[in-house]
Length: 260
Ligand SMILES: C[S@@+](CC[C@H](N)C(=O)[O-])C[C@H]1O[C@@H](n2cnc3c(N)ncnc32)[C@H](O)[C@@H]1O
Image (cartoon, rainbow, N blue to C red; front, top):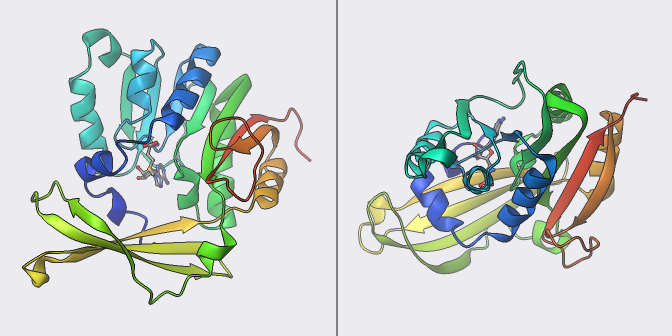
């Protein structure tokens, strides 16, 4: 689907864009420590979360389909102290098809990975993968954005200007803006990130990002009908309730012993 890959074609840009996002790293690392590991991370990206888990002494297997993200992760792993380096295993793969011959006490999918599963079939395949890899009593933790009805009603032609963004591909400071469009039937939002070159307009470019929106009660129903029980469904990694101000829904679930 358009917008599934473009945002992940440059691992260095990804790390630059999300360098200040740390609160979720602490949350997932605490869960990893509680579990004792090893941890399976679905959609490991550039290793933003996995590296900290490995540095904390817990083994991680990271699955990622996008080679540029994996390459950035490999480089980052290469700069870790030897002991932590040995705790990370990176594999190219698609979470919808993954079948390792291993079980884990904790499976995680941090930072909107699940929003790249667009149809019911894809979501069900994702949950089947998680169930396949969870050991007895194991936990599945992930987060997705809380849909914001006001934001989803934005006019697709309206430009939302950001500031200037230096892009690692050439170091140029691009003028950054975004356009949002939402398909009410499929619940898929596309954000077009527009990078305007300050001088050479023919070098301007844009990257689409496509994300499936999950409404909270819908998400709990999907988990229930796919064999999970929800342990907690909270807001923004601080354990509080979901409110209108919530940005990320944070879910911890376990596989139910018997499915309905
Ligand atoms: C927003 S990034 C999050 C990366 C990392 N978990 C983090 O917290 O920084 C979403 C990641 O999900 C990956 N992804 C998308 N579809 C996937 C799939 N079917 N299987 C595995 N990973 C997928 C993307 O390539 C991307 O690296």
